[in-house]
View (spheres, rainbow, N blue to C red):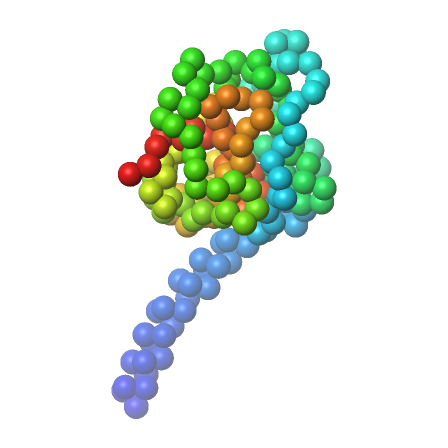
Amino acid sequence: MKNLFGMFLALALIAIPAAAQNQGNEKSAPSRSVGGGYVPAHGPAPHRGPSSAAHPAPQENRSYSDKKGHPEAPHVHSRGDKWIGHDTGRDDAHYHLDHPWEHGRFTGGFGKGHAFRIESGAPGRFWFGGFFFSVSPFDVIYCNDWFWNADNIVIYEDPDHDGWYLAYNVRLGTYVHVMYLGDR
């Protein structure tokens, strides 16, 4: 009887934290129309409108929550692959680099079919599969809810900002600009 009670107690100690962990993941997905495992078929199209220099209002005060339940971060709609927030054009000073691709170019694969699990790190430097990246200082605020040792991301080429890629978080449906820092 003591062995049976001991086994039950051991299983309960394992099962309760696991159940709580899964419940937390479900709550962090903002909406079914954003994230939840959806992967866009392609990255954003190049911006065709006026450049950000034509918009004097500071981008720091911008709202990205375009519909009720959508995140207050750049994100992608699962219906129609609409990239919300990627519309400031080539001249956006937040993403200007004097030496684009100074660490080389990422060769691990782009877009749907190339999901990578973040192995460890933080916004300043994270990695997967021996590839290292850094989140743009301007975008760090948009990845506060990322799991830096568990989230799956997909890398897309940025058509407007030389030297930057877009890291799309599959769980949340949000994305940030990232710089490739090289591999092992």
